[in-house]
Length: 115
Length: 109
Image 1 (tube, each protein chain N blue to C red):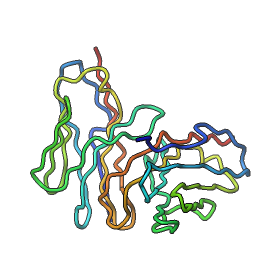
Image 2: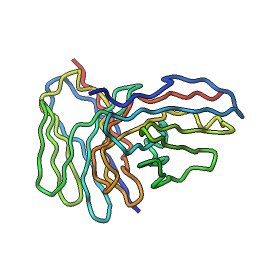
Image 3: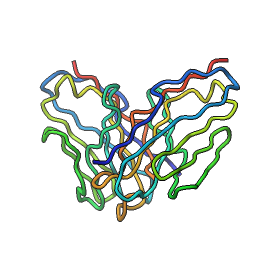
């Protein structure tokens, strides 16, 4: 079974631009979560989707948004990029979002560099 | 507030030198404790889930244990290929996983 895939793998943008990252979960997984990883803060939760609905959102500004499609694929968007948005963005999928405690499987991440 | 603390931050071992990594957590109602391995530039790779105090799980040279307040990842006779960052995480109230900052392990041949 194919794992979680993320595109693109690497991205370079300039301040003020916007970016869209894509995530395809493991086949049959309906829950997708996004995390931002930086050397200083570690892995921080961005948002969580299940059946096209955002179930939870982390403590990030409104410039960060996401959505999930009917096939469970998900996208996240960051508008008006800032230097501090440079990070590894990770997507994870699990079978269900009924109860937290399911194993999350991570993709390889998208490395975003903002200049 | 849900919190996960890992120690040490970094650990350097000689090949064959066994040691343990620590993960302490504060969460209301534990619904599992997860260990992941992360290689540089890659996503975390799932290793173990522990659900109750006293539970142990093993995989090759790794053994994870769980108490009511902390978990240990024991590494027996490590090899250079065990070098990675090891992450510990617990489900939060409003988040799928709350992660610790990780332990960066280097195993020297």
